Image (cartoon, rainbow, N blue to C red; front, side, top):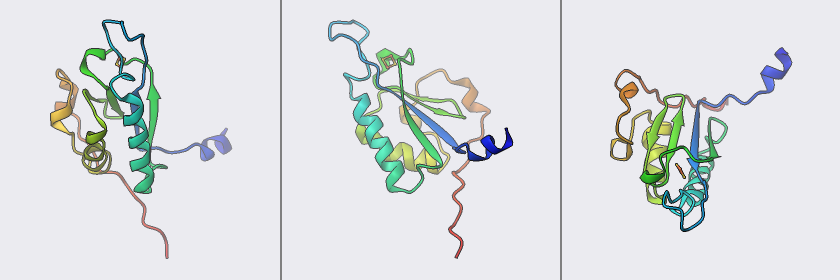
Length: 130
Ligand code: FES
């Protein structure tokens, strides 16, 4: 069991991007139609470009039940919910939140009282040993 645990990846943050798809005539809409796949792809590319894809994982998510808010993104372990996320917002989320440990206020979905008592932390990046 210990051997298995030692090979598990140790992500400091997980980013779930809704890429759920519904028929075009569904009144709830869907994040895929609003650019969810492009947001996910940009998120993965930005994490890779910064060399932090082993520290922060970006994944697809099915419907996160916030469909009316556009592309929904949730970051764990802090449980920070962003709505209406576009490709143009990804760099700010990566730099400010995922690396810097600060919430991107302008993208927050309302009514997240848990954020008032939660202390976010900067990403811990180990410097390569020389
Ligand atoms: S379709 Fe994305 S939150 Fe529901």
